[in-house]
Length: 256
Image 1: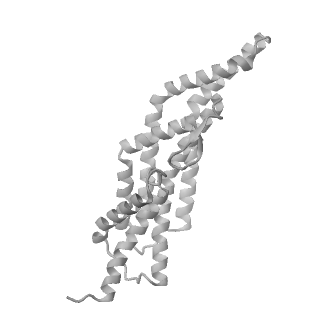
Image 2: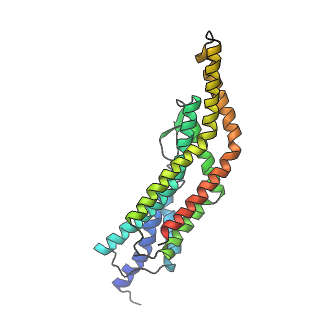
Image 3: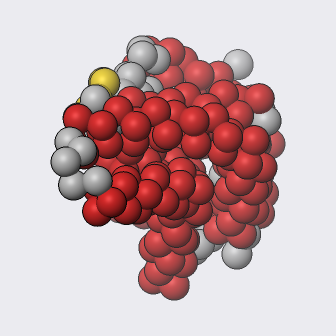
């Protein structure tokens, strides 16, 4: 049995194309990119998924160690990063909503380290992020994301031009819409805290001798926690809608 060098290079290439796309996605996508997940686990997971996907792919007639091969490799990395960033925008909007709520209720100074990104976020933002992550995992969102990326090889075969200026602009517009969603997530609590502050202002005008700083600060924090509890039932359907729209948009991106 003899193996030609061209066959060996072709086999390596058929594995490398999906590997770089999956590994790039896991580099920036939520849950997979968490600092608590070791890099070796991500690499092994990308290798395992690539081995499952590679036999069903039709590899292009491109040499891996060539200019065309480098361009195709760069394209796979950009596709994986783009899809990961689209999903990351949902979690970023949730964190921004939590920070907005924390600032309005007077807890902007209380922060903790985000285990996913390794940065300081407010306690309320961390609470919202944990809820969003649990809902994401309960929906098997991580499996749906892998399935969308695996299906992208069928919808847009290797070598097809799916990256364009129009596609990048659609991603920018989509990320802007996610910040609008952050306002919707934080709106019930922010409006409620605003009404409490207006009530405290009226009390201050009615009784000027009242020390509003000694009374208003704990009242605002307590009212914020009560409003958070009352707003929880409306948070789940809103997050479900965000994830559904996000997966539909990811499918739209990989479909030429």
